[in-house]
Amino acid sequence: LGYTPAVGIVPLRDAIVSHYEQKEGVEQGSISKNRVVVTTGSSGGFLLIFHACFDSGDTVAVGMTCYPCYRNILHAMDVETTSIPLNSEYKVTAAELQLEINRRRESGVPPLKGFIQSSPANPTGAMLTASESKELAELCESEGIWYLSDEIYMGITFGDIAEASALRFAGNTTIIVNAPTLSQQAAVACFEPASDLILRQHVDRYKANREIVLAGLKECGIADVAPCHGAFYAYADLGDEQSGLSTAGLGSEALCAKLLEDEGVAITPGTDFEDPILGRGPQRIRLSFPGATEDINEAMIRFKRWWPTWKAHVREQAASIDAPLTSGI
Image 1 (cartoon, one colour):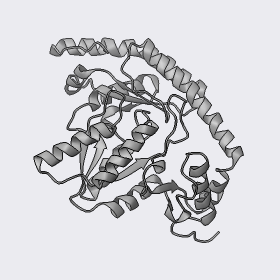
Image 2 (image 1 turned 90 degrees about the vertical axis):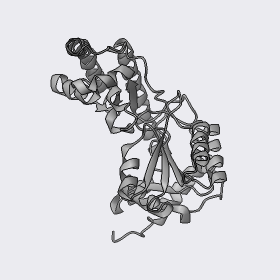
Image 3 (image 1 turned 180 degrees about the horizontal axis):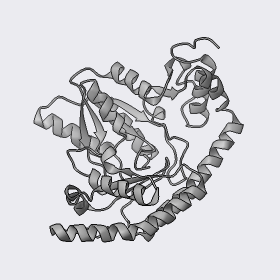
Image 4 (image 1 turned 60 degrees about the vertical axis):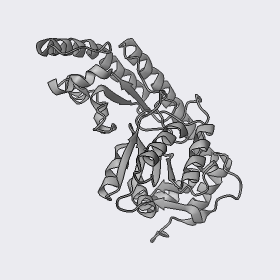
């Protein structure tokens, strides 16, 4: 097979352009393969684009809740991050970003150089509408801010909100696809109609899994769950007072460890995704549901069986330290 071009093989880059024009509503002829870069893994893509856009000492805005590698990679490059609180729908829109822009301008601190957000999002599954994505792109362009739209879960959506790639609205968006040499050859076929049918079958399975997970959380009395419009995650908040119990070994990390030990079910603590300074991590958990439906169903049966035991454990421990209890517990 030999080496591939540094930016990816031409047939794959052409197929990606066609995909964005035919599936994502990007204007015909507005992009070319010369703007498409294929990378080995998303982390490799982040490294390239971060180095291209930012210098040491720059500041990039991220959502308070976000994919942790954004912060990790940027900090490793000596680029600062600032966390923007999510709105009630678990996303950052132009309104929230504008507040941060104004705050920095009024306080005399350097302006933002970039903003990155995924849609559908990890860990929340929240999605931007077309108008929200357009407004963000226009705001960033007017303020000279690089708008980095992470669309790795595009195509895994459940019909609640129409998909809207930022490439429709932002003139300087970079497309990044993950694939080494052999995978690039195979990836070309992934843009054929038959492959799209296979993708939709997977998405139908994810949708069925989502219903099982959301119904199970509701049965457990866990009501504060992010919208879950896309991707394959359910992100739940157990309440503000749950954070206060983390010092007693009752936060989300302890919850996840205990669930794994008792029932063999793995979920992820919110501490992986939250800004540690803002302290939301100990009260939030992420459930991932891309597996077989029978496995997801079994996992939620075990979770529902185990949840009352955890609540009793929390009450017992909290009583011993006279800690307040949240309604979610």
